[in-house]
Image (tube, rainbow, N blue to C red; front, side, top):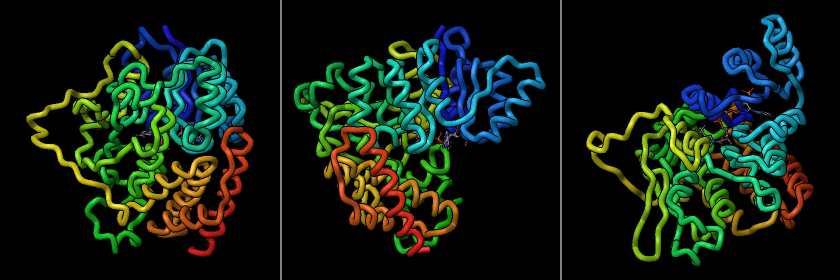
Length: 392
Ligand SMILES: NC(=O)c1ccc[n+]([C@@H]2O[C@H](COP(=O)([O-])OP(=O)(O)OC[C@H]3O[C@@H](n4cnc5c(N)ncnc54)[C@H](OP(=O)(O)O)[C@@H]3O)[C@@H](O)[C@H]2O)c1
């Protein structure tokens, strides 16, 4: 029986994780659940999974949850504040942590789990994008097992040779190929993109996800963040990671070997597959995902990504090549811009403009300490906010 802590339990990945756990009660027990402010949804999860701890960062929401938990006679202890997430993730009783908080807010609790040597199932790609150097050094120091949840990185992990950390060129890998669906605006005329609404941007054709990652998929910043994530996870140089648009989202990514072999992982687009893979690794368990029907699928298509349509992809590729705190600043500017777009303050194409202008104004330093990363994050948010005010 493994004790699981789910950070970001009320989100899309959190709920899919709990569904896989629900299907495998003989293997997993829930030790802690955390969220930001959705106390009602967390209460339902507490009723079902009876964790030892439930954490809400929002103090008022935590107080409401505590009252409800007591009124129902449940034994779960309710904690509040962001530090409590790190405490439960690093608790000695925890075996594995699902890191599924969205955005930079996930960095410190995820890092706490890594430093405590836990098995970490990483959905929160922003943590690695911001602080890859510090994060991977902590993985090495603590002996934490890091398993990717992003469907692309989970696919690559499944197709990689075992010793990939020695450098791709030393293990016969030519390059990693990340697939991208192209999002909801793959065929929208570029001149119409400025007028698209948050609801249209969040209506992903293949995946059901939280709002921030849905917008990132529409701009393809999500793929840009994944390029950076792949470099850290697989010890790859930026020029060893390519992107191909594959509208059906059936091939989740590929590894291209020097002998001409290309290994791919396929499956229906449902995050429960990579979640189940990582939860049970190196074994396999039921995820609830229906088997892929190749005959029904019929065909698969591939196209190159267009930087004119997806300027955010280019911005991310440039940031990872620049190194240092450039990726942390890219991530922070993107979070501010996406939040402004979702709040109706700027248009869709302004997102890339805000990030571009922020990075042009910023200066980058080494990202080998957490302090330098956090300082860069604050600086980039303030630069981005100035750009947003100008455009609003
Ligand atoms: N969804 C997918 O299919 C998918 C696929 C690959 C990777 N990912 C990655 O997985 C992560 C989660 O994505 P998602 O789509 O599941 O997001 P989501 O549905 O928006 O859920 C986010 C979760 O994080 C919590 N949260 C938000 N802000 C927080 C804060 N400041 N402090 C503590 N907790 C906070 C939310 O709590 P409340 O509900 O209380 O707000 C919720 O539990 C992201 O990094 C994303 O890039 C997602």
